[in-house]
Length: 134
Image (cartoon, rainbow, N blue to C red; front, side, top):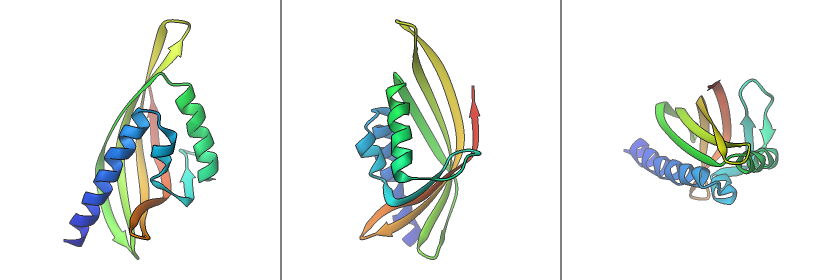
């Protein structure tokens, strides 16, 4: 039962985060991350929340439209940390010249480490373990 409650809470946060991501709402999207966040991009060194936020701001600024969806591959709980691996597919439309757009699809596998901090689930670590762009 405890796991069902955690999954329900995390699913709701993911839905809000996806909506914020698609709306390019940086503040709402980064609210799911704890200030101590360790973000590890695919095949790159880990960065902190501040640097990840700066990267996201650039990403949102260079993208016309974003559509994203995900599904959970597996999840577990260890020492009060909820760990999940999800598969995500994002379709980006980027401006090209004046009226044209370039479509890019990015598929990733991501490992989230969630912790309940003061009654609120926050991501304390996020690692992109697989990334394909086409």
